[in-house]
Amino acid sequence: MRSDNVTRGVERSPNRSLFYALGYTKEELERPLVGVVSSYNEIVPGHMHLDKITEAVKAGVRMAGGTPVVFPAIAVCDGIAMGHVGMKYSLVTRDLIADSTEAMALAHQFDALVMVPNCDKNVPGLLMAAARLNVPTIFCSGGPMLSGRLQDGRRTCLSHMFEAVGAYKAGKIDESGVEDYELNACPSCGSCSGMYTANSMNCLTEGLGLALRGNGTIPAPYSARLRLAKHAGMQVMELLRQNLRPRDIMTEAAFHNAETLDMALGCSTNSMLHLPAIAHECGIELDLEYANDISRRTPNLCHLAPAGDTFMEDLDRAGGVWAVMAELNKKGLLDTSVMTVTGKTLAENLEGVENLDPELIRPIDNPYSSYGGIAVLKGSLAPEGCVVKQSAVAEEMMAHQGPARVFDSEEEAIEAIYQGRIVSGDVVVIRYEGPKGGPGMREMLNPTSAIAGMGLDKEVALITDGRFSGATRGASIGHVCPEAAQGGPIALVEEGDLIRIDIPNCRIELLVDEETLARRRAAWVCPEPKIKTGYLARYAKLVSSAARGAVLE
Image 1: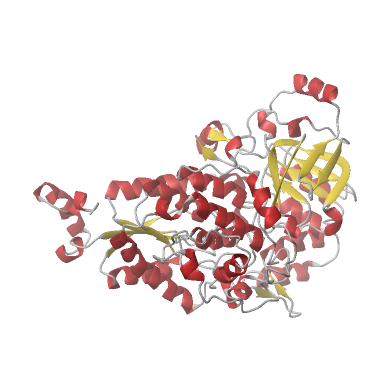
Image 2: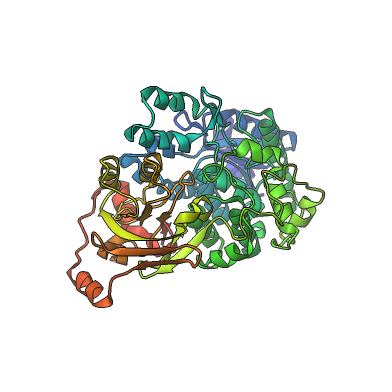
């Protein structure tokens, strides 16, 4: 066993003495050492209960003959970090999480790992670490929050809360209306209740084969989540016995399965940042444009918030991720020969799985749309691509042309929106918010929520080299590459330039002639970095925008 390096032989007597200082017994040190990576903290609602999940995982490991050893992973709450400098630190934590977990696991020579993440960057960060370390590993997330309920009985969630601020600014609701959302949008522990980034990545972890059934959908407050955690702890010992490792499971076919599931569920556009980064750690390069090929043949089967008015707890009752995959499998859209952490193939896992609510998970022959939830657009404004959650775009905005309203930061754009300076037909352009330019590639949930709250989401488009939350709806197009700080065409847009968006044909064009663009490019000077010292400054120098959102070279 790998842990023999720290527990066996006379030469390791000093190592064992330190384990004894921790209270471990000789009998415990004779068993496999299983690292349990706990993302518990007291600042993230999706993580506030992970101490209980971690204890359940430990119980499962012990029941199956292992010795669990807990160590931590950091986590940022994107909602609390939103709207200020803190959001610049969110995406970069993904790499910090991967790096620190790798360091801890190798320094202490664990035989296997159980990852206990939940919110936005912990899941991809720990998946990246799992791929690097390639020791038997299983994931058990903290699960989604329950949906909220307003005083008038309407169900609600965090994205509605952000939009309520815009509605207040537009005079559509008063302060008591905002407070109603404030007190009721987030009623429990867990990752926020719509198909946002955290829940998207937890569901896609099932799609990749690294988690047991229910990982993405069993609500955080349910006791079934504790039972799942115990089973994950037990199953990691079986993975160790079989020597079944993450890279045996996360094959190229598994990533394409995850992309297919992504399209069917209508996941967050952030998955287009995270899946390629995880695949990169496995030695697999995912072509961003290939996502369109998958989208064209994959029907969108779910309209969870913000695309619709259903929530993660509803998806769980309908049969969860496996029920969605069972529908996809009816048309042969998945490679079911892939291995999973159950110790079985995906085909074996899906035997007998039923869709328990055809209203929530549309049958494969009656989808919401014949194409998937995400589209990658290319054109003169984004030669290397940009991403839109097309399942959350109103029909009338699928094709749009309008004048650019240009802003060099999120704050400038929000001020203009709330002052009524953005009108029907406009295309809001927010730039210098990419990985280098931000630095940190902030999420643009505040401006899109402001547009929706002001009632303009079916009339105004938004384009940015930043990124969008899974909570975003409307014609919100992000991840524009090359970003402005790299001299991409988005840096050359001027006020009033016409921009054409054609989502069905995957095109985005800046309607300015080449001679004019060449003149602007010759005059362009990159602005001074917004943050010049500390981790973000170092990160901005290392990060490769072309690697799709912060894969460190």
